[in-house]
Image (cartoon, rainbow, N blue to C red; front, top):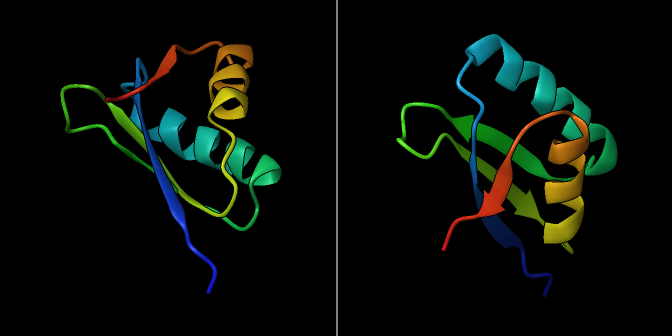
Length: 73
């Protein structure tokens, strides 16, 4: 049985169009993952669901794209 991981991040992304672009970029690095933003949440949530998600990679990629991203505990 393959178990899926769900990682949830707090971000500073506030724009819907921008979130769509960022999902496309992240999908290039995590093609088998389900990725979405919940911009209605006060923490502007980024959710990544898939196998073997590297939290550090997500944070680094978002930083390289110019956005703050941290694990939501």
